[in-house]
View (cartoon, rainbow, N blue to C red):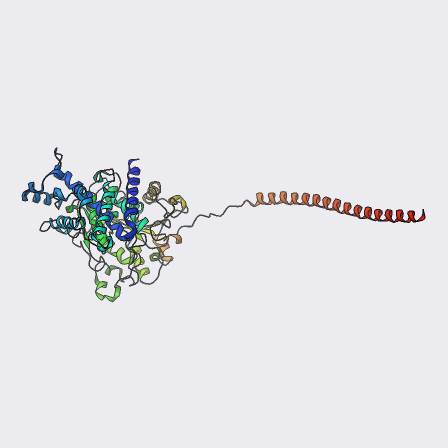
Length: 538
């Protein structure tokens, strides 16, 4: 398949770059330089295609002097930014081996691209886009020569990818990000419960949230990270996301990656809205809600201000539950936030830490609120070891405001039939994803896998929502046929008896031989004595 070959080519090039650069650049920073240069090549190629508009000329060969203010303004209004021909990736690369100012020239180009949007509607979408791609940082080397050498290595490695970035059949940025995280930065950037969401899990979430959705006004991720979940929604939905994609991210680095990712997937600046800030304390897009599709993998059990801010109990997101999530565990704060943003016809699919479904205290009260208001559609237990950096077997919580009954579906998808074992992390293949989605969709009970549980049973179970509390696991112990076993024992005992008889015969024979030997020796002694005595007589 073309996609497999492209993914292998991408990974091979990243390995090559790593051999040249990784030894002196930290894994987390190395990731930033590869992704930043990948993005620079993409927007260069994308902008070049836009400027050529199918016409028979090469924008890269056009002189910067030809560009009039009108041409520049028209391009910015449409694309959101502007790149001069001399600033294109391919032109900078040509001069790079002999350019003693490569690091500062690249910095100037990135600043120019960002500044081109100032005063236009795209300004917020472009501002600070290259902020983490610091070409003058000492992380690249202590001298200008060292910096240029490593930047050149990254540029050449990215340039040697032999398929057009804009024409790739793979999720180029997502694949690169996943590969870089898993190989070079698996333990970085995860303070506060942050874990990169593998593409297969993102795909499952998107399919669950979109199941049977014919129209979608907009998609939202309250803790969007690099934007992979939103992009999966775009990929998995055959229709049009009418008002685009919305997300909020507290980490500035991943906030930039999310915006890059939108551009990389040809989502224009007016169709995505990524905000930087604390979702729980300073939420964006209150005027944009509700959302038909919400997908999220919020940070697991991070601390937040909680009841130390007395105003939060009156916040419209949290007030209906009558209690705030504990200060040490903000999981339900993200869930209640998502519920508040969810439309009456929409669906939210959220990756959750298992502990929230059985812990007592405030979390139990919130579970009671969600159950008795019939907001919980399904809870799915996933296999362990799906995420980079953690082996935790997480769950998926599916929320809905338009359920047709009061039952809650529990799915145990943790068994070996739901994943493929791999060296570093287990993998959900397409067949596993499709199987889970099918079980979710048909709402049929399957022994050891799926159950529909009445609210009354959940109430009696003290609002415990753990999947294991409602689905009996398969008995993996080998079943024993007692009759067959007894018959085999009888046969064995009979064989043992025969063997003992044979041993007894052998022992008796040995003992008989020994007695004969003793008698024979005595006879020999007596014979010798007789010979001696006879000799004396003679």
